[in-house]
Image 1 (cartoon, one colour):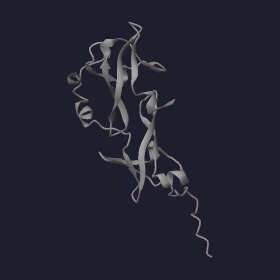
Image 2 (cartoon, helix red, strand yellow):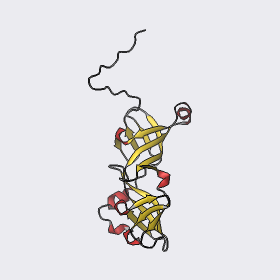
Image 3 (cartoon, rainbow, N blue to C red):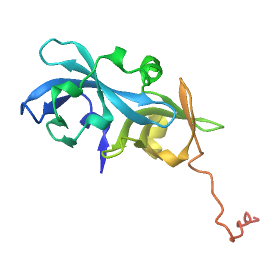
Image 4 (cartoon, rainbow, N blue to C red):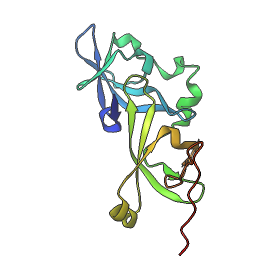
Length: 175
């Protein structure tokens, strides 16, 4: 199931052991190499300490927030040696510029994440005001992404025709 970014921001972390909210997920930690949410930066409900919730420790996502076994799954940033570089990048998807090889399409206004794998599956791109009135918002699938950099996301041209194998491309009409 796909969930929008607003459904994973500022979510409660619910402990199965205590039956209550033990922390709040403030923001996702994106791996820019594959657009996977590796975890969440959290705020402890009691001490307000900054902790990390790894995505593999999430048992379920419900309307009230993320369900985990216990508060003990939340760890300090210093303990995550493998994710240290990804956390340091502080990569954000929202407001990232989306371009093709030839033109700028707009900025990421929202994204949809697969609730099981936590991979970003769709980007929703807002265009300039003039284009937005005439063409609306763009939806970019993850398989259209060519390259991801610190400042932009390069995608295949959405208007470019892809010939089907074994089918001839039509000739332009003479007129």
